[in-house]
Amino acid sequence: MKKYLKLSSVIFLVFFLNIFHPNIQSATSEVTLDVSKNNINLYPTYYTYGDSQIECDASKTAYIITGTKSSANGVFNVYDPDSTSAVYNIIFDNLNIRPGIWCAVASFNNNSIVNLHCKGTNYVAGHNYCSLKGSATLNISAEPGSKSTFTSEYHVVSGAIESGITLNKNRRI
Image 1: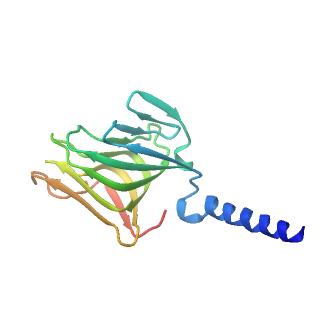
Image 2 (image 1 turned 135 degrees about the horizontal axis):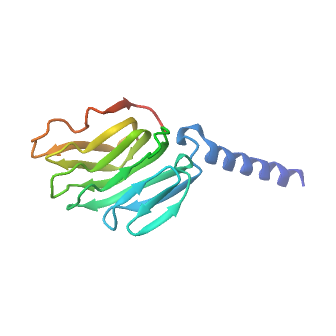
Image 3 (image 1 turned 90 degrees about the vertical axis):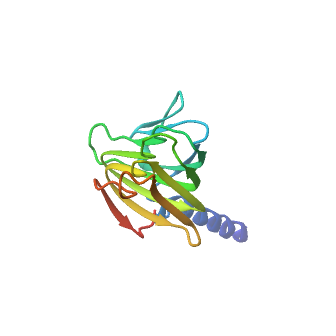
């Protein structure tokens, strides 16, 4: 009986550490969103994916954004309508976006705090615009061996990340 109690205690401890590990910024759930299927809008208490609105707590959700899109008008937006400095945990996982019209790929609004983690190979390019725009604090980290490129194609606008974004590199989510 003691053997089973010890084993169940170890399993609980591993489960507890995986859910509450500090590197995931208190995210207790994950949502995978494919940009090739729908545009994405994130809010503090819900997100929209195409025509669907799904309730959730942004600070406790890790949004995994993946897929390929070559024609878009702003692929995803992060909103904080009440300027509460909402925290968002976003993971780019093998994301490839090259808009076909003048736009940024992602807009971060009203001083949001975004923990952006990059996995795999990501290519995020704005079209005659920076790839990431808005007013936010962007804490960016990457998996070992991953490669992420943020750029502006056609170079009418210089820079891949708009000046309103405060960039903090090498933080972990």
